[in-house]
Length: 189
Image 1 (tube, rainbow, N blue to C red):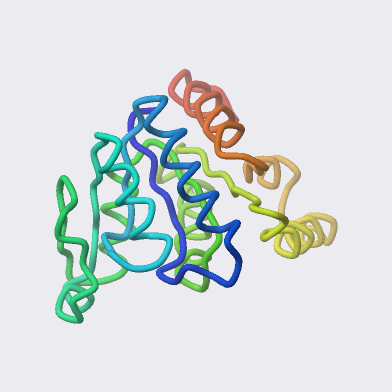
Image 2 (tube, rainbow, N blue to C red; image 1 turned 120 degrees about the vertical axis):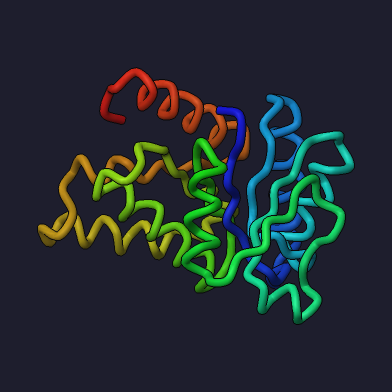
């Protein structure tokens, strides 16, 4: 895994653990030589992870819709900033640039990005793995819902098992590395 798409909030959230996990994720990525692909913003957890990867000497590839650039929320200091016309183009470009996906705490945009990556995988558009970084139980409610959907017959157990969950950035990167390696060898992860 050379590039990781990180989905996270354009806000910082209400708890210091979110920022701590974001800084730790950047450090773990830098330690493995993994570059960042993200939504191109300078605010919230998005800006924090970009700033930390850049400060550590890593590369950051941002993808942002033109409307958000015009609102002056684009991070102008990234390695490459790709400006696109729509949110759909943003997600497609991030998917093209990344080898795997990590969802950190965030809101509706983070959920949208995660579920689109998962559904595109289900439809065979890519075979890239994705993981939730469950910072201090942030994703517990959603994990319970996903399990409920599986028990209710709307997700196969194989599809459910694709949603990796990790308690630390190191665990997340390890799981994503293993799944990405399996996918490149044609194995089902």
